[in-house]
Image (cartoon, rainbow over all chains, first blue to last red; front, top):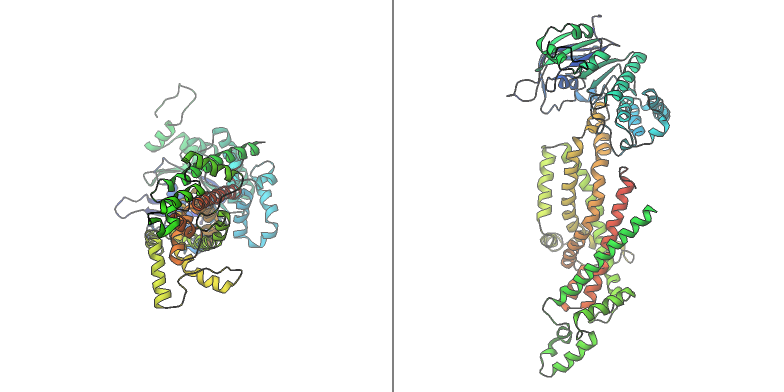
Length: 271
Length: 319
């Protein structure tokens, strides 16, 4: 491990109201360049709030970050930067993709134009050749007949296709970090596996790091090198994915593992 | 094939609506007190020897026939394209209505052209700066705009701008093709009056739509991808928030005609509203029936056009 990771979250605390307990408490997470890191936890564990904090996507009229908290991307402090500066980071150096492929794309614009918009927002000089580049990236995320899909509207595509379009959007200006927040959770298992494979291949090709937020141990097992387990707003355990999966230390991790449905009844339901 | 079938169904629905309206227009006046013959004869109708004259007038106007017969004759004439003549002036109904269309049309058009862009800007801004000063101001102003009666507002504007300040005329209508400057100056107050009401309704609508749209996942996606704020609000969100407005404007045309009637009366524009009002007061059956039916046709057609336009703009609605 180098001294300075690509993404370094240090002692992150997020509070949504002065009276309620913080949603995230003292979370520290490192993502080295080109690696695949997972955050696993149930809903309400603070994993999404943590991920959203990186791109400052929490509604900051109600979300407050702790004084001592710090998030750096490539050595650049994000939490204390003005939001106007963050806009140039979003979608350019770090991108984020979300769950629910039904609603993540704007329903009244052609999907190609939406991807093109992201590219042009960060690389205005590419305006002239943008269409060809977008069709290339649609192809890269595994969309067949990308030139035709370019002109289609989100409702004309399947859930898996829409998710691929969003990935194309996220990688359009070659970010060094992709944050995937339950990005495959709403897809059925076969599509989920295919989309994960696409993300993995893209990450390897481009040396892009992936921070995978999930509640699904299966995704961690298939995708991640390193994993953080979050529970009640805190990181309770972290380690190489293989180690966590085979010898979990924390009770909560054991329960999470036990909750994975198994095909063979001879395995114990609880660890 | 499918489109032909659909057009056929729509035409049938249109026919049913028009038939209902025709029955209603026919009965509405006959069920209210007031005898057209007496009103036509004026003060003379009070004389003792007037009974014979009144009877002759009724026969001339066909009012001595039973209602179903009267209705049948009227409907038959209309189906042949004959809307009859005014019992008061003897002028053809179609001619009267056609003459009254321009003031009403320009009044409504002006109000729509002013209210639509303003309501989009203020509705979007208020929704984006939710609970901020802009939001509070917009909510207060739109509440007032919707609550204040158009007649009262019109009179209020006349008192300020025509009486006290004496900078704008209090009424009248000049065709824009004769003297555009005069037309423009005369239309300022009536159009403002109607636009304030329409703007209030539409701003509320855009505000509600935009508040919903801004919370949608695709707006978060655009934020996460680094799309600039103006582009997110005025392109990504606006297209979604404003598209349903086409239908609302189409539907509101009916209400606007109703509002226009009152505004016309206040400013003496001489449009459809005033024609209807004076014809009702005179119990000029043919004119009222004809004007109501013709206005209904126009309002329904505008509604259909709005529907069509919506289909063109929203890609999710296709046949």
